[in-house]
Image (cartoon, rainbow, N blue to C red; front, side, top):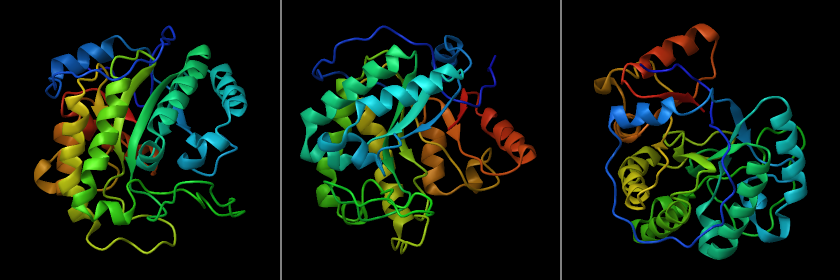
Length: 291
């Protein structure tokens, strides 16, 4: 029986020391039975997307000079105090490419803070939304009154369109997922946020973006699975009207719906439409999260 939970996360677990990624045999996509068995062990999943108030985007959150444990501790304490038990948190490939060991060290520190507040984490590896030209290093200040004024895509346009650079993306996914593949403080991996989003905001859209994403997304699932994670993989659909019919979705959505261990979705509409979309997602017989 599928429990109908539309918000994220899971029970807290003991903090464990981060260990280096070890070679592991790639696993297959979870069966429906495996996915539902995992979900039956979870509590009611409730949480939010999280980026600390002191950071304009995911690069500033994790960059060593601007990593802010004090703010994270305070804000996750607030979240826990109102009953939240999970957070969905964005990473970025440029962080790993420029400082892999430091990035993993700060991830471990973040997980320890979250665990103290009995909050589990869903990490997001890639994101197709907002500025298509991310730059590693110190970030520009926020623009007052502008939604997500400094949020950046991962990978950026240049990397997305250059298949010769995909090896770096592969290394990022395999090392990050592999390092934390057995970490009970992580509830799931969201491999790509809104992958077929054209970009958002006033940024110029990447030409033929969906074509590149449709080719890369299946590889991202494969890379993540090669690390044999104990946590489920997912990527949430967010547009369209026929999520329960694979003949009426695009190539990106088909990958999301057929490769995710547990299904997930976004909805920005009224409750009636949310319910309709949730029922469409439940038709696949897998647990469903609204992320």
